[in-house]
Image (cartoon, rainbow, N blue to C red):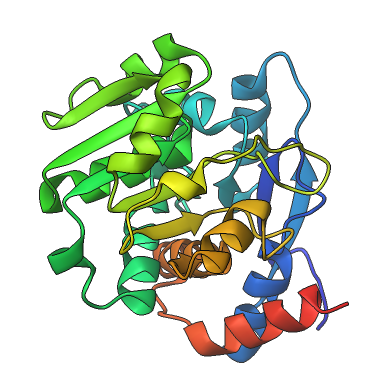
Length: 272
């Protein structure tokens, strides 16, 4: 494609961001629909990420995906509560922000386990960042209880605020959380390439538990490997990545992209 001054610019920002598959996913969809746009990965290492994001809008950026650790800063820039992972600028420069993490995870969960609403009453989410909060909010109306566990307990307490059936767990209660949950969602960078993971207490999981990990590099994390060895249903990180990305693409362009094509492309990119 030919990039000109009229080409719309979109990006994923975060730190780290070099591992992101979002450019492959979104540029594939852009090509599918013949759009004059390009999507890039931009590392954002700043003590003032809010100013950096505002500046990007001034350069005519059409939209952003926001990843670790800037989702809460992005929400402040967009003037909304909590954490967001999608930013959109109108032609007039007006900014809106959204969190597609939660709904994206729900779509991935329904794709992998269509009967999950009959199976899941108690949820454990590991991680109190933007992704974990978004997933908790999305799942909350459909389950009895949501527990969020985080190394820093105060962050877990902040994450459950405003969710009536959510409770914070201390990290030392991780084993109890694993043993009680019907659905376990690992929503941190633990286990990502270059990041160590703890010895997850998968041996304590219920026989019918579902185990999901939002990490997709590697696609088979230590957590999923251990859960699969126990015969549990596992959900890798590609599902959430694709579904939250499809929701973002629809917000930016008004087009619902092809989910299956994205998975084919990303599996090819991850192949050794």
